[in-house]
Every structure is written in structure tokens, then in C-alpha cells.
Length: 118
Length: 396
Image (cartoon, rainbow over all chains, first blue to last red; front, side, top):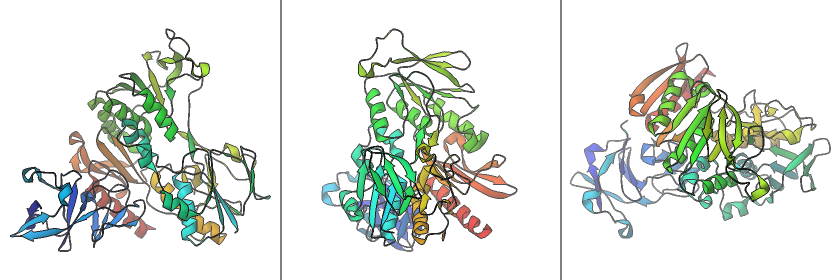
């Protein structure tokens, strides 16, 4: 598990980008928290900077759209899904569960970089 | 329609084919492509592909399963050289003659070149093979690169060459780069991106000629001499190991002369991609749609679905009206523009600052926003782009 930020620092409609390898984006979509791989599967763009509407996030570069619940693209130009990651809240802190084989970062390097401010 | 032939196998041609199947067209589908490659994405060629960050494989626009699902006959490595609408035939350079009921023209555009003797070391960049050849030349240690034209391709190539550690000079005939597209204030910002990164930018001077390097023997390959100098219109000579010519493109319409299709800087068609010749629609860079020829990736991807519905309907039942949009990545800065900027529009920075290389600006005319521009401000840009699209729909 990797700490993301305090829950109050991730209000509805906001996102946080975790500078992992690969980076992960955590969203607060109408009160539900979701984590997906941050990089659009189409081309190099950060989904944490995308347009959030319901459970969909639209890539800021070419408007590919992904379902945060499944990671699946809902329209072109993306054709491959992004990976999803479980999120939990413990004592007011948001945590993302990254598969063990990918959790190569020591906890102290998992710095939560705030997505570009709304 | 029993047979539809898509001429051109890049982004627009592929999306026309995908849209035909999505619309339920189950007849014969033929795709003609001049290049030997299956459809691939061109924008990374001047950026990540040139620097080596991505491989050709990663550029593919359709995987094996998607190609199989399309159930098309692919005629690659051959070019259409004639269209005879009354006879409903397309002639290919390899001599084949295809009978077809419908035609989607998606032949794109070809780079403009400079007159004179063809020289080794002089490149244009449009295709994967172009980019691979340039990349090969950039992989043999530090060289002096002269980029002719500071448009989007030129600027991106210059940026990639600088990233690779080469000595780069950009020559631009206009007073500033991207002046017609972005206006003076934003053009000044784009000029600064070059000089920020140690790239020399020479503006206000054209190129008179390219000259061979007199000190080097003729290269074996093709017997061509190697470029050595770029002579500018103002009389200066720039030493050059590699020259990249990025002075725009012309639509690939030469093969349509005499076909009866109206040609005027592209295939003339309406806002739905429909030409005056029955059964023929045009999409992508080759299409002059409602008086305007866009060279944008997004319209090449989106407009074919509209054109194909019109083709199947036999008339214009739908038009493509999306807000024009393009992006460019230069020197680690992502530039994005949406809307239709006019020559007299004023520009105003509304967020951030050009000095910080991160800002959002709006173009305005008579109090109304005509376009939005951003540098490294993807999220605010997205909001502004949506607002502009919504305002446009209300105005229309």
C-alpha cells in the first residue's frame, strides 16, 4: 500500500498523480475514489489532468475516455485499458494498493504530487 | 454498394474503413496504401520516434485482431494513379484496375521540397521511412542540423535534435515562427522556446539554395553528392551536415487531374466530405472541406465517420462541425490550440505567464472568444476548449 494524501486534500472532482513507475492517478469522482495508471494508453499524456465526468475521465490530449471503474476505454483513440488499483481510506488517509510485483518504490519516495489545480 | 475503395491507408483512411464497418457496411472493402506499412500514427515521428523513446511497433493504429475484424483487402505498396468516376474504376501504379461503387479519398499530403539537385543528407518528414532515415543520420554522433521552416514539424524536429545533443539552427522566412497560426505575441513565445534550449533561430530570411559539400567525395548511394551548405536569401552560408526541410505540405491530388473532381488546394467537398461526383467522398489532409483544408490529426480521425455516413446515404445527411484542435510538443512544453483564430484577433493571457512557460491565453474578436491556446496547462485548456465548443454550438 502506498499513501496518497489526506482525504480532505482530494475533494470531489480532483485528482492526484503519484510519481511512481509507472505513475498512478487517483480520482475523487463524486465522492468515490478510484486509482488507475496515469498515462493514457494511446499516447503520452497524464490522465490526472483529464476531464472528470461521472466515472469517466477524458484524456487532455486527444479526448480518449476511460471508465475509472474498469480502466476500459469508452472511445477512440485509446484501444487498450489502463490498469486499475484498489483504493482505501484509513484514518483519513487515502491509500492505493499497488500489486506487489510493481510496488518497487520505498514508501518515502511515494510523494503525492497534486494534480494541476482546478 | 457492393464495393467501397478507400484510397489512403493512414489515420483518415483507417478511420473511414472502421466507420464503414461500424455503420454495418458488409460489402467488399478495399484499402489502397502507397506505403508498405499498415496504418500508423504520424505525430510521434517528429518527437518520440525521432529521439528513440518509442519504436515503430508502438505507432501502430490497429492491432492484428482489429485488422482481421475489418475484413478488408489491403493493397499496400501501390499507389492510385487514376480515378474514372463514370466507369467507376480506380487504376493503380502496378497496373491493376479496381471496379468500385464508392470511393473514399484519403491520400493525404506530401511535403514541399526545395528546387535544385537532390543531395544526400536533405530530409523531409512525413512517413515512417522518412523518420527512420533521419533518425539513422542523427545516430552517428553530433552533427550540425539546419531545419528549414519553423512550423510545427520544423520546431518539433529542432526540439528532438536538440534533445539528442546536436547543433541546431532553424531558418524561418517569416519574421517569427508560427506567425500565421498563432499571431505575434504567442509566436514570440514560441521563438523563445528555441533559444531557451540553445537552438539558433534565424527569422526573416528564406533559403536561396542548398549546396553540396565540396570537400567530400560523392556518396556511393545513388551517386548523390552530400549536402554541405545552406545559402540564405540574405547571402549568408550556414554549414550543414543534415538539413530538414519543413516548409509545409501540398495535398496529394496530382493523380486526380482529369477525373472530373474539382481540385483547389485539395479535393473540394462540402462540410460532410461529399464531393460533387456521386459516390466519392474526401477526408483528412487531402480534403478541402467547406472552403477549408485542415491538416489536423483530430479532424482526420473524426471526420471520416461523417463522410462515410454521407457516402452510404448517397447525399449529405450530416456535416462535421467540431472545433478545430491541434497540439505540438516542443522542448518539453505542450502547446495546444482550439478554435478558429482570425488574423486580427487580440490575444490575452488569462492564467499563468509566458515567462514561466506555462499559461492559458484566449483569442478574442469583438468581445467573443475565437480560440484558446495553452502551453503546459492541459487541464485549464481542456475546460476552456469545452466552453468554447459549447459557446459555438449556442451561436450556431
